[in-house]
Picture 1 (cartoon, one colour):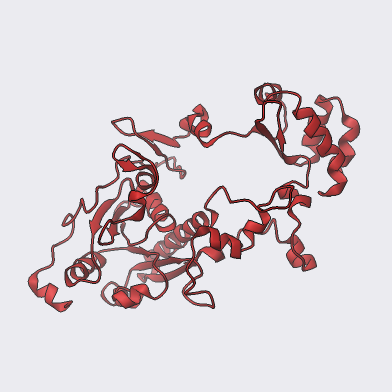
Picture 2 (tube, rainbow, N blue to C red; picture 1 turned 60 degrees about the horizontal axis):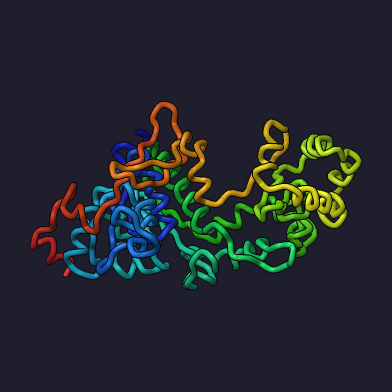
Length: 379
């Protein structure tokens, strides 16, 4: 696999760092999860469990090894350095400054391992006015302006359905780590990576920043293309209380749909800019789709060249045969499900290992226990 031979030391918790290293583990990296003293990784204890582990933990830590270290102790420090000297990548997601206070920051690690690719993931980055501000995903999305975009036609913001700040920070960090590893092959030098959840979110707003950059004003989501201003890019309720979406506002799709519904006279509304001008078309769609249940509309749209989809629950999505055919759900020997890997190579496909480690399962495996002399160096 692509990352065979790459050793990763993962000190991060919750979602962004663990998902980064999970994707590396799926493609051959040897990932050692360094879990904190006490109860270890918090996601071991959050949410529902199956097969003796929480679903959250299994789906972020399968295929990894677990070592529990108290980095405030001499023994924990000595064990850490035994691991760090051999690592290619180190990932941490403490608040800025914590790793330096623990004595395991980039400069300290680089001094004994010059080729290390050291990646820090935090809410707001390692410098700046918000550096020390505590935050998880929701607060970052709010400060990035994303929660304000996630509003309904009633003008009220809603809770985001996906941890977008966590997800984009994880993918940004993965990209950066792989770039740094590629560069190290040419130069022999490692690097330090500073990834902020806030930066990662704001980098993904090109479709939303028109009003901000062109007219220096706030967005009006319900009047804009991506959030309900376009009739052909919208949610519609069906007769049974379930929902469908039209997900492509190109005029060709509107023409195909309106011809099939016997209302080509409404096509000019689809040509107007998103906003109040398209309301007659939105009203027609609301009335039309409310007349039949979701399943009937799904059958009606079959074979038509229109961007359409039924709104599925997450369970329905994972039950879908098309999802299983893509390898996005896998099972262990006991029939416990896990999420698959989204990165697909033809020549060297990833391998999903459905087993997640027990706490401290791999202590002493693949690294030396510190000697009394080594322990004394870290007193």
